[in-house]
Image 1 (cartoon, rainbow, N blue to C red):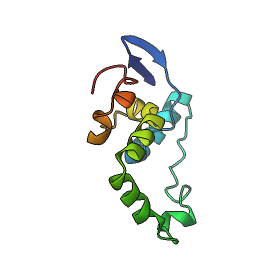
Image 2: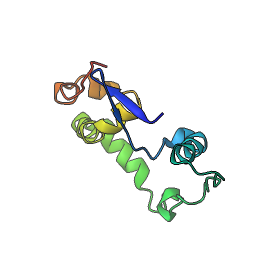
Image 3: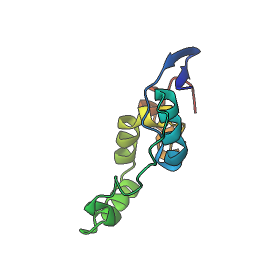
Image 4: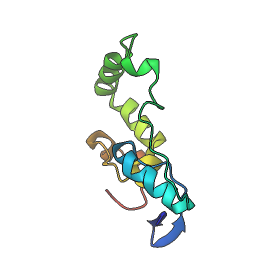
Length: 108
């Protein structure tokens, strides 16, 4: 079922699925919607020219995040709903910052 438990309360969640398990999630979403003849997931539908990093920005972004922990902590705070909803582990540098962990409903 598509529901999430947060602070002991169950509530319905409309989800797009996780990239890591999209094949399975895509089928589950279609089943949940009652689609009798499932449509295969098109793995090419989310390919974007910038995915190949044509300008080489990935390396400099990673370096900036490593060099300045406050940048990573700000990113963690911004993406906190994703960490919670998709059960991603919070990076260590973010676990050290109470501005991030104080937003976490259950301590990591």
